[in-house]
Image (cartoon, rainbow, N blue to C red; front, top):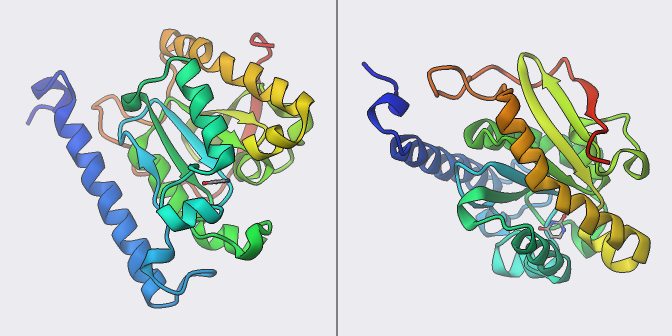
Amino acid sequence: MNSESDENPMGVGMQLGAVVQLTELYAVIESQADQHLLPLAQNATDIVPGEGSSTAQVLFIGEAPGEQEAKQRRPFVGRSGQLLRKNITEIGLEATQFYIANVVKVRPPENRDPSLDEIEAFRPFLEQEIKIIAPKLIVTLGRFSMAAFLPDGKISQVHGRLHKVTYNDLKYFVLPLYHPAAALRNGKMLTAFKEDMQKIPKILAWITTTNETGTKSNSGKIVQNDITSNLESEIVATLLQ
Ligand code: URA
């Protein structure tokens, strides 16, 4: 049988496949929440799903939902979300090109930092979400999201620098950014956040030219390798500074 991309140059089949997989993934997360198998969650409605295009080129990953996000069950819809979404629009990304998710999918009480245990509990779901979407570029927002890919990174040193991260055999391009909430509190961070966001279109063009995404096999099917260990990372480009 032909691969989906042979049959369907627009990739519609792949897109539907990814939508179904994301729907199924969140059904599992919500069911686990209902069974009290997840930290922070009492029931399914506590889960804030990721949002956006299932075949996004850019995957933005935040830390955990806040009050507005928990109420509306949508990621990044409060004040920091408005800053993020405004900057996404300003760099010209269209709705089909991005997806927004969180490491932890339930609001921690009083918006406290998520604990390591909470991050670990949600980590397998984030990994599946990444595999399904297979983005060209992952943009981490804040230090907790950055630490999922660059555990030894210091956000003040690595923000705005493109990294190639390898989990087992899969390669991801990761651009760490300050969290937009931090940018709202600090003028210097706001400037850095905006400048770093402006790099995204250039990085996407560069990745497309190098054709070096490791998240899909040649057949266009998502590689189903486990991405739980063997984390290694290297800074691949200071070219964008
Ligand atoms: N901060 C986050 O990290 N995620 C959200 O969804 C909202 C605020």
